[in-house]
Image (tube, rainbow, N blue to C red):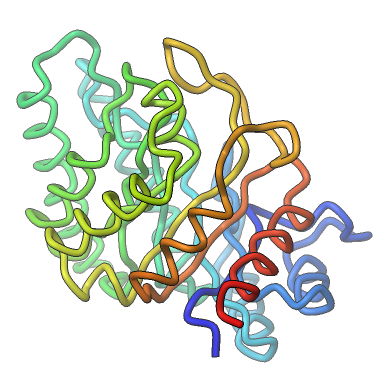
Length: 280
């Protein structure tokens, strides 16, 4: 039995009708068992629709997560922008709660904006503490928050920062984007040993709370000295996904892997087949 479920960031491209429900049906046809609902600009899933999505996902044995809208900066110097960022994450958490996507709301936490890193960390941590309190009071305490490792050095969210947030704030676990770490390191984090280094670090920091509930993003990626430029399909990138799946096997992690390559389900299936072949 596979310990990892593989799926797509949003509705598979080959879905004829571009709805979440049709996307779930297409994933089922493809044999993929996860989907991240993408709230790129706004949280469009209302409570009643989310309940139907939850029912269909459970019937098809597909695990759901959500990605909060992209415009979030918990380190903004403008209080109204911080409040708006929290509100966007909160709206995504509400949708995740009603859709049964408790495995996580993924979000890009902040930008450094030339402030000291430790100061930014403290600001993001405190905002997440406030957000978790608001979620608990609203009844969304079942939903995990997943700060994502980011692809540019100018963005808050390296591996250590996201893991530390998970240590310091209950109800928080990282979303580890291996493409982003590869780009952020200008080509680093791309060998079996380096992937094992990442997984071992998280295991030591977070233990089984992480190992039994991993949430990862994977894609090919174009990068330079400033980090991420754009996502690529595996064939056009240098991401060493075969060693990555070997590392997952070596650590025996369980959870969800979301493919963000431009061809979505094609590379998600490539990952699935690579993972399954290592287990033979």
